[in-house]
Image 1 (cartoon, rainbow, N blue to C red):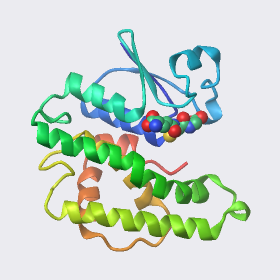
Image 2: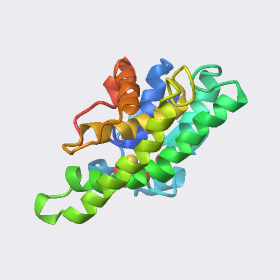
Image 3: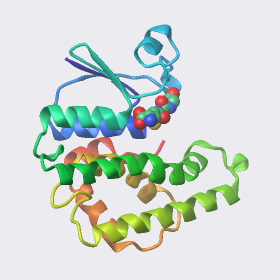
Image 4: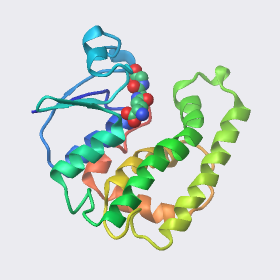
Length: 206
Ligand SMILES: N[C@@H](CCC(=O)N[C@@H](CS)C(=O)NCC(=O)O)C(=O)O
């Protein structure tokens, strides 16, 4: 039985939940992180010494790091689809997963946390604007790539779309000015057609 620890409004937990839904995987989810606490208990820290979510346990295997979890589940259950079998296609999907964590989310994080989780009087407008501009700048890289790719790693949804798609929803849902990026918009509209994406990712920001 697969167990997932993590609050369902977490970006990184949503990657795992979306992945499981695409694969029709059964699991038990335990609320953890944010207002639920749990992550600083000795038992949880024994599973994940970072005290962060998500963590999974699958038949005795404990894993943390959302992208690694998505890769593991995709490789185990979705070879040839979310986990591309063609090495080159898989490398592309992998690349967007890493890029999402190292470039996209660090750009957007300040704006997201500022607008969604910070009281108006405590916001730093300059930092928020910098974050908005930086996110728009890095999204132009995605937009150029999607000019010649239907999804991030080619003609079908892969784990690469799952990693970036969770952050992309936050960008689309924030009450901000967004530069027109027609290929990103087309890709986002494709994701929004998926029941699993709507169910686990396209939720009110919190
Ligand atoms: N690199 C980690 C980051 C995990 C992370 O930062 N998780 C956040 C939620 S998105 C967290 O646990 N925050 C503290 C909390 O929820 O209590 C991953 O991708 O899993």
